[in-house]
Length: 443
Image 1 (cartoon, one colour):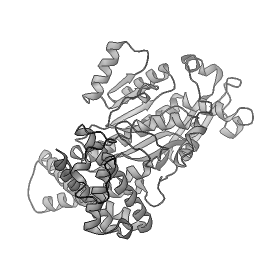
Image 2: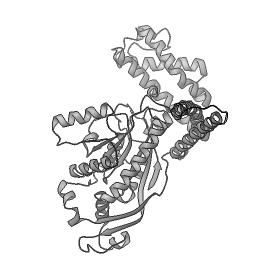
Image 3: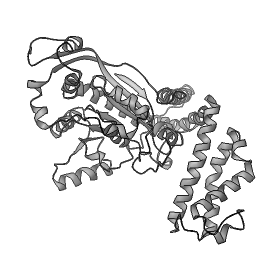
């Protein structure tokens, strides 16, 4: 298997429930508007192919490439039960790690199949592993579809299996593990399906952001998505995405795969590589560090209690362990944000200025919408012309409020281009207070 941790930076793409506008997704991830993102790809130490032409002959990938193309191999892997089981096992492992670390959050796996028949098999394979699973696809009876969506919303399942239906507007913030079982050649399609797991869970519901809002994408290394992931990281222009021919899969492809594609033998799956989307922050390492800190801290405290002679039943110890873990998470996570600022101070300065600008604009926009005031009309001039110099009667409301907020921050911390990282962070932290003041003024 192969593990990579990386937030996706979209070209002005909107993630469901999140307004990104012109801000790269790497920045809104750092600003905790959407989940952080990693990937882990699964592979096998020994992977062999049986072709329809030579059904009894075991061939290596290199041997197959002498007379078959890469697309044939990718499709064979995608439709292989053995390779699918490797991805299934690893996705379950990652979900269990999340549930162990944060048992009160209903994290789920989103599994994307090649076709409806393939998705149905994925459903049976996940269920065989003891996972409560539902399937959602375009040919379902309306009552069955409604029942499946209800189970998802009420957290009566651990795995949601689909083909592409969830790419079209469905939004569930607890989808945190994405298991992709099909190859993509269109970056736009790949970005859309990754977007299904990016909606951030509110901080009021979670143990801590770095633990619960840390999405992971899992796929088999041999279906060719590493190239897609790398392109995804480089923000290829959307105009280039539409020209790429997407893979097509039908139920006939799935049912007749033994006659047209390879049979697969997979032995000893493993994690083969790690990657982080941002050069200066390895989200995989950060996640593992936090988990290890929590576990070590909690176990040390439990051992002290045991060695002191206090005799507690196992269920009481487990309850205590969970309470201590929650406290340890909060303590361990305190170093996250300073790490982001201190590792790359110049990059952090640019980042925080962009965050400040985006948060101010978004906060003003949301405030006006919530109060039923037009963003581009000018009725707020009469309220703010006493506070903001050189306003014109034709200035739009959103521009007026942005200037007012910036003026308040400048009075407190000086011109924005003169602020250091500490005062930029303080400026960001003060925004909610200033926006609350603005809302009182316009009511």
